[in-house]
Length: 162
Image (cartoon, rainbow, N blue to C red; front, side, top):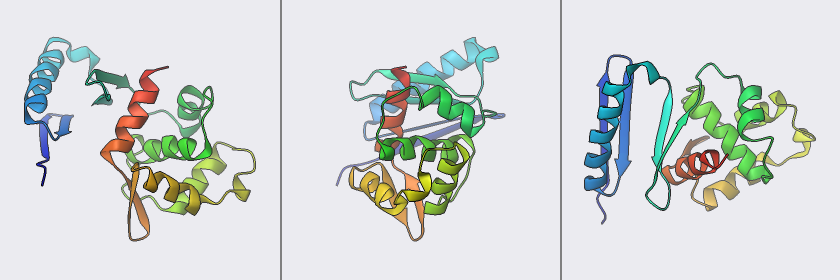
């Protein structure tokens, strides 16, 4: 069984959370991030940090005050994405930016409605979310869904390519 490491560091309102199967990577990133935070305190905002599949650090600044429509226009609308990928991006917004702890299928449908996605009412959201589960991007816990590390990495990597 492979080990999984998680480290959380909290400094006032700032929290850094690192997760990986490689403890060396976590220690290296911890030192790097703390040095960045201490040398540039004015840059502290809601930030998502991940490593892409090549091990390159990806840093994204995403304003916590962004509405779902602003987020959609900035990160989703200008790309040629499948409906499941759009659902995953909206899921990320709900869970990580809006801070919604439990996300049900109806929440994703409401997000599609809020961005005025064409023919959202004809979509089968259960199938859409199950396809994301099959790709390893979501996990289902009863009637709610959660992003996986793979899903977060996929989203952050695709956002960093903008």
